[in-house]
Length: 161
Image 1 (spheres, rainbow, N blue to C red):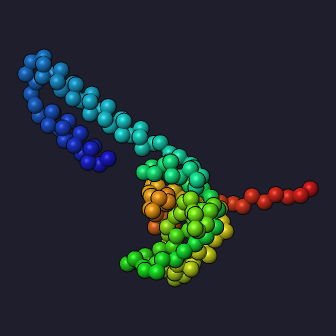
Image 2 (image 1 turned 180 degrees about the vertical axis):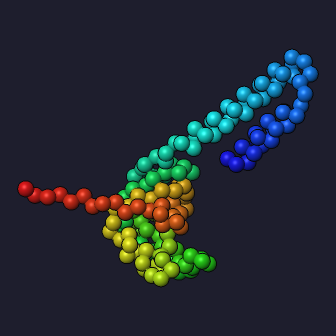
Image 3 (image 1 turned 90 degrees about the vertical axis):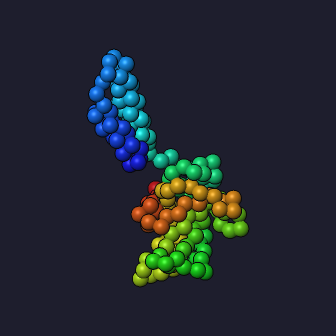
């Protein structure tokens, strides 16, 4: 958004230095100013739209969108190779495990606990993951390198009366 805002601001600044030469120039300035204002308002309203909340099975229909995907962590896999400054990535399947997962998210363990810490933190827990849904080998996933994008949900405990 910053680049579009800067371009619009630059255009408005240039227009302020242009001396109107008759009624047509004044109308042109007004038209350009209104167009710039419309673009800015459109961008501002698009940012206010909250991400859609979907199930792991529905995630494939929302590839390319920022969404919140909620489900239960049923399987995990620690990658063999690490990434500099992050460690080894951990893939966590929601709702359906290998060999036919419907959705997974990727995160990293803490520096102290390593990837096993991430597995322990999320295993068998209900979570909601926020991020852009991408496809890999036909399976939707979210890269949640920032663990604040993964929220553990409270367990629904039923009581017998």
